[in-house]
Image 1 (cartoon, rainbow, N blue to C red):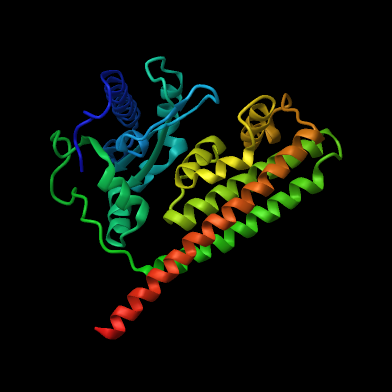
Image 2 (image 1 turned 45 degrees about the horizontal axis):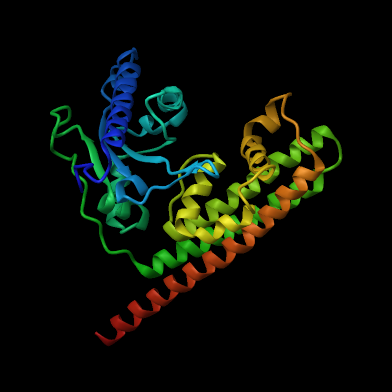
Length: 319
């Protein structure tokens, strides 16, 4: 894994270094304040920058207002430390408020055991993170953790047949969920203010299900987030054709998408959340188009995986 950020300009290097410091400082303060000796023994083992800022392919579209996130994998010592609500809400809140951090930050947290298990299986997502990522922090190198048992394993070779079967199951399950949620959204739209908000929540769930379908079918991994903007960005980096579903990046469509993004929480709990049948109709039409494009994209991936599995099987029979 790379250790340097030379491909980033000095301002971005300082920004990444500051994000790393916030993560470590916030976790140290939270763990140190615990009365539990076990909790105080939890450790951040490694921090890895991955994605577009690690590869050097980030974008910043000022016209649409969309830009690449800083994507970080945090590898921790104990499973309870992967609880995003308990341990990471304060980190994400601070990074969101910090004026020194100009980009959104997406954090995923896994134990070393989870990451190594995925690497041994040759899982695409984690193999790419490790092969293309930049190691920002290593507790072993800093003398914070013992070396024994703290190493990342070499990525194994994926089993094409197993990858195909897993991807097909993910595709089938999440495609069905997307259609169910979309149908529920259409069913409640236009019946009244409360029903409109209920419809908005279900339409959010439909869009989220489509994006999870893409991520899980293509990479066999999806982050634990309901943030549609982040899921959309990750999926469009996999297949840019998905961006077409939301139409031109202009008013009022940007606001309509933002209303959909906020619906996961606000449509259920905020009395200030409001939508209209016209907005819901636009959202439903766009989600239906998104599902159509995503379906084709996933079927292409499944066909590729199936061909790989058949090819491996043929080679084994002739060996």
